[in-house]
Image (spheres, helix red, strand yellow):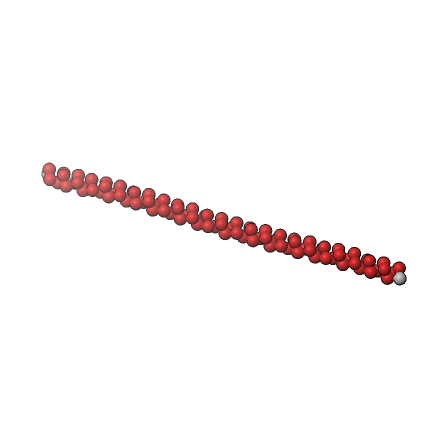
Length: 90
């Protein structure tokens, strides 16, 4: 009877510790999944920010090219006016 009681109590202790181990493993697995999801979302936000900054950079370049195009037109207009003025004098 004493041996049976010792075996049963040993089994109960083993079963409880096994349940705690399973719970701990489930917590570790859930934490790892949460960390992976957080890291992935961080990378997604990072890529979005990079894309937005590239877009802003291209918009800035387009604006500067438009400004230069206008300045070139002005220079061309002055050159044409200067050439026409010199041709009239000749």
